[in-house]
Length: 192
Image 1: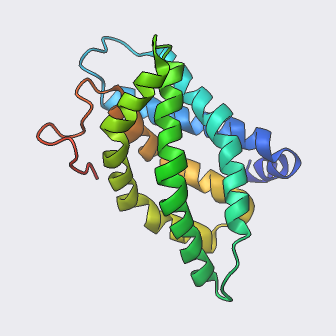
Image 2: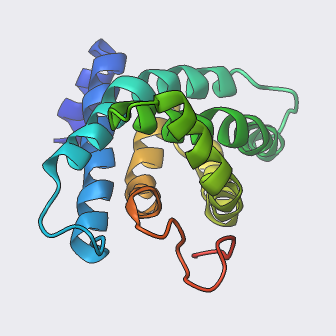
């Protein structure tokens, strides 16, 4: 199965990553709905799952493929560790705060078909951006250091997608919770 996946990646990297990323983003939302159902959610929300799958497959995957390709070209040091540290810094100081997190909340606000998606996106970013970024910094730098140092280039996005089943569960929970907080006491407390 892994060999077949590798052949698909080599032949059609964008499409293969789109399908894989959509599926794994969906797994994160499925987990969130199963383990952390919203108080106002009486039954499973298939529209929410579809929005998450479409975001992962159609929006995030093509950007992710290009981002990891760009990061792979960073070779400022002779050592793998030095280059991996620079890649982690770029990923966590550029992509996460200014591309990944804003993209998620903005696109999801549009996918929810709210009457004013721009205002809804702004509201979600104001409400969740800092909490999400802080939580991101508690889990992603260590994982990305391992990913950039040890995982072959064509599998970096797959590794991220597998790891992010839990992260996507968290994002889905946060986005769809009625309070908009992970912990009841303080909106900016760290979940993990």
